[in-house]
Every structure is written in C-alpha cells, then in structure tokens.
Length: 362
Image 1 (cartoon, rainbow, N blue to C red):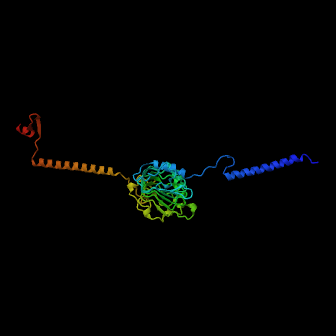
Image 2: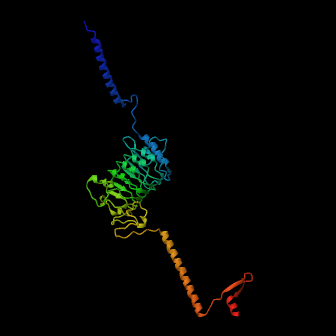
Image 3: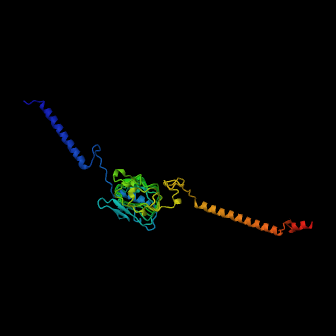
C-alpha cells in the first residue's frame, strides 16, 4: 500500500518548481521585450530620433525675423526629415542633427532657447550674422558640442555660466560681439578646451586663474580657473575691459592677445586711463595711491574740460576788453579831450542836446 500523505507533498514540490520556472521565464521575457520590472505591460522609453530635432530647428527659424539670402527657405514644417535642409548635417548612425552651420548668412534675429534641445549637436557655427540679445543658458545642454562659433554678431549680456557644462567643447569663439560682465569661472571645467577667442567685447573683471600672477605651480590641484586647462593653447582676450593681473599660467600667450585691456601688468599695451574708469574691478581706484607714491588723478569727462576752457577764454577776453577801454578813457582824460554825454529829451523829435555844451553856456 502507498502512503497517501506522500502525494500532497509531491504535488506541493512540483507546484513550487513550476512556479519558480514560470517566474524565471517571465523575467527573461521582460528583459527580451525591453520591459522594466515594476512597469509591466509598458513599452520602454523610445530613443530620441531626428523627428525630435525638427521642433527645435523650427523654433530657431521662428526667432529669425530677417533672412535676406533665403537661407532658411527650405526649412519646412511639413518635412519630417531636416537632414536636407540648408546648413543642417545629420549623423549617418542615427540621423540626428550633428552640425548647424549658417555662417555668413546675414541672418537677423535672436538665439532661441529651444536650441538646447539639439542634444546630439556637435558643431554650432553662426558667425558673421546679426544675432542680437543674449546667449541662452540652455546652450549648456549641448553636452556633445565640440565647436561653438558665435563670433561677429551683436550678442549682448554675459557669457552664461552654463557653458561650463559642455564637457566635450574644444573651441569657443565669441569675438566681435557686445558681451559684457565677467568671465565665468565655470570655464575652468572645460578640460577639453583648446581654443578660446573672446576679443573685441566689453568683458570686465579679472581673468579666473591663480590668485597670484607671480605664483607658478605645476601641481594641478593648485590651479584654478583657466589655469586648470592644460590643453588650452590658443586664447585671445584682447580689446576688452579686463583688469587685475594676468595669471602666470598664461605667460606663454602672446601679449598682443592680451592688449587693449586694463591690466596692471607693465608689459601689456593697455587702454587709456579714462577708458578704464568704469571697468569693474579695475584693479585700483582712481583716488588710490599708486606704486610710485603719488595719488592718482581723477579722470574728468571730455565735455567738462571743453566747457572749462571756453569759459576761461571768455572771461579772459572780457577782462582784456575792459582793460583796453579803461586805458583809452584815461588817455583821453589826460589829453583834455572828453567825450560829451548826450541825452535824448524827446524820442519823437529826436532832439539831442549836448550836456557838455549846456554846462559851458552857463
């Protein structure tokens, strides 16, 4: 006879084994179909494709209000594939937009913040146009960007600190704009940066680098700001309003690339003192005592100097004329010649009687 309690036990073991196999099979199916545990029956997030770049490009076009050369005439919202649009280059791998080159296109407008949605963009070249406004902070979202060229435009405002988030950037060219404010210290995070061109702007403050221009250290941990960028070999900061001292780590840079600023260094050709009067952190106050022990002169506006000169000449001329008139009158009195005083008795009759004659007749 077979012991009956054995069958329920065998059935329980078979059920546990079967359940374990079913669970393992289900988990394998989850991995194969791209589903995530805890999110069953949901499709995995789709990877971005070229269709995601179209709205960003159309937003860029919308911010352009003058296109005299019709560069953007083929940028059509009904075309889902922008890879054949003028100035657009796509990747052969996933058809994402990797280059936007519209240099020398005479475009007039501003940079739309939506440009930060072109996450696969590697080159943004918009030089020699007439872009106005500020550089959008969203540009820091372009993590794959290697070349940023916005030179020779009319861009204003500061360089956004978010540029320090573009870890793959190797070239930044913003020269010949109207940029102002200080150089963001976040530039020191761009370890792949090789070329930095910021000349012909109105940038102020000091160069973010080592605190002392005489301190030279080969230890990376001792360097700050631009001094951390070992690959930075081409830098141009000329014709701005930068002040303070040039960091020692930039001594290898040609001094012509630093000229036209307000540096304290004696080996650079700086701007005139009156041009540096309003420079932020100009290095020293106009009324402070300089290294030669003399107090600096207060720089006056040119128009005030002209008014002072004209006023002085006018007063001197009046005094001279009065002196000449006084000498002539004194000479006439000494020679006995007097000038008769006259008085009009009647304006209607215009009869004039000499006061000198009346006195002599009496």
